[in-house]
Length: 401
Image 1 (cartoon, rainbow, N blue to C red):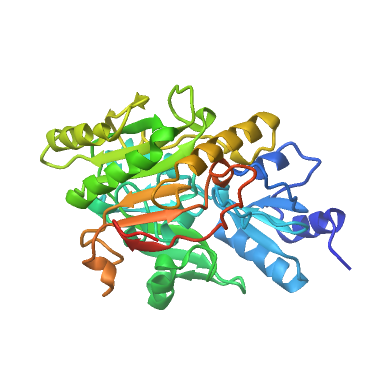
Image 2: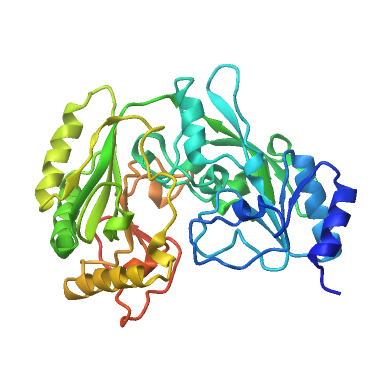
């Protein structure tokens, strides 16, 4: 017999008395379902919010022995809905949110539900920092275990390079510390959270907080092809370790500055080293020559202050207004297509700072990663075939499909 809300809740409350359990009749249930992609509308039977790894283990044991499907949410940014399950149990990790700096201030223990922006703010208040991604509302653990691309690759390495240890709940409910299981630690570093178990805590490297010269540049979307070609040539000539950025095609509602037309937005970030701001300002001066600048917010800032904020993607909301904007953006790109697929173009520098393995990435050229995992709806006109969502294919910077 299929599980129902009425049958699940009393069993879970009896087995795990202190566990927070939410159903559709509870006001907190909707918070579990507020995902970045608003098109995700499937609904679990219940949402549970454990606060310790023992509760996570008990939930997993119950689900596995009862044949009940479950999924894990850390931040809620997965566009394909893998942090949502229909007719099962949603394990919302966001209450496991401790951040503890270790003695010596060289590492920190980060709970499995910590959000990237919260991590930067907490560490920043203590004069510390660890790399995170471009969006402050992403779950940190899943981001780091999945590789951890971000603004700081050229100066600090990937998110996965920061991982020193972990506590993991395995499928059978066992709680494992990777200090006693180095093979599991090796597997976690790059394979993604959830592949081998639920990560309830990561121990990661921390550093003195750096200064940033960062912000957003907006160019008219009609100039996207020419702008991206000029930026491509600039990075072929000079790709400083300190620079990293993303480029997205966006309608005005998605842009973190006032603009009145669809545009190409560049997330621009320079990690300031002992050379100071002068190299960053020179490089920015070169970048703004790529085209007409609709907006420029690049300034001195900090990791805690920079990054995409607490926003949800309107791209997937099927309102008439958004559909019109999608058609307009898609039509512009169809008339003047950029030189390569451009849902998101990520510029990251991996000069000798790869995954710490004997791979070609360690000494290869910088990477440009094109992905249409995000903002897909704004990339194409309604009468065009949708690009197939795909994972991150990588190729040497400057090459073409």
